[in-house]
Image (cartoon, rainbow, N blue to C red; front, side):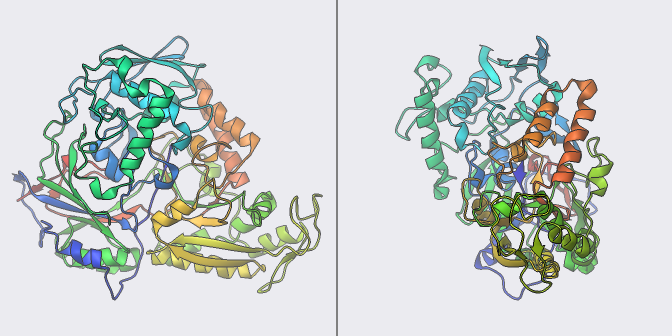
Length: 613
């Protein structure tokens, strides 16, 4: 499972600020107005953190559907309160963190078909109940009964590849698998998906009594498929009522270091420490506040007014970093273990038949001038994207082809590909199909004579660099007679529109791509397997399916070879359109806030933060 992310690093200063931002500016932030050279740790204090423009959290239940499946909801919101079974990221390093995990390292046996997980016994829910094996079983039962509603579901993978799961003791769960799997892949991409849920949630209405550890397991609703479905429907409905997030008797039961004190439907979230948290680091701050913004120009106005402890500077305003430094901020670029792209809808009745043609995807990729976009619109900050394998952070996965690509910017190459496949290319006009058919020199299946190359592309609003990139694409496309009708919408709307169940949209760009979490090995199953719940464009390629599946089962000695075959195929096949990958954000952090690490999976741990004087 991977999360859609909202970049927040490149907008110009606006002349107006949204009302919500003005309200945020007066929210009582404790940001310091000058730099601090102190070393004395302060107990308490309020740290304010800027949300991405238009990317406010709007779903609290960890079993998250695709329309809400984003970093804003998972890494930056849910996981502060509800800890996953395994935590990833050791400082800025992309690796598993057993110190912060609810469970000990899994033990594989029986030719890697049996997995034993022992939970640490020091965690408990805020209602006093222990975080134990039954909470893992509860999650498994809900996922199994409601897999079609879960963004991470891929038929044949988790939970289908688990033939049984049993609580063999209070703190131990044993999983039996349908075959032998690569232990690293299964840990990083399957066990990583589990979030234990409190038994108090195992009910079908607010008025129903909340189960406890003493409740007979056989009487719990989740023990049957119909009961687990009813429980999910109840919790999903509760998650749809944002106004009750901070007051709900459901969401107030947490095992993470933080719990909600207040929450607005616009996305302002005020967290306070959870006194029952059993993790290794207890919060020092008295409050942690996430503030919503409609654009990063609005955010930057608040940052300049010293109204944020932890914000971000737009790329276009980097010249002002020295001013911010004088005001006590430290610039720290935040890179993530992910890649950047936008999706095309292979099921759209008009554009889908064209998108299914590899030659067209190759021609279109030739129109994306990644190097120039990085220099002109991102001020040199970022790396090109050529495959689903990250390259912004050093890692052992990316091979040479993922670092160099196959389709450099070339108007002539794009024109040649279209002309040789039956299109009458009209620069700055309308290119149409003049040789319909399925021969090698014809337009392709489902494309009628005189079909024009005209497409709708919606992109996330609030970032000027993205607007500049899309305008540059529109101009480049026009040179080969392709018309792109551009439109903008807020991030949350764009990711909602990019649904694999909808045939109405053609191209959607939420301007952030994907971070590999909480599937942490970049094998692509959740976004490119033909039946994956997060395969937003409905890409369908049997060869890709085969290569992806082989990465899941490859013995350790063969994994690199198998994985390279997969990534090189995805470079060549272009399941999506790759675009430059800038930093997640150019963080500006008050110098008197210490203990901050920028996690490569976009997780935040404000429990490690503290002020000094």
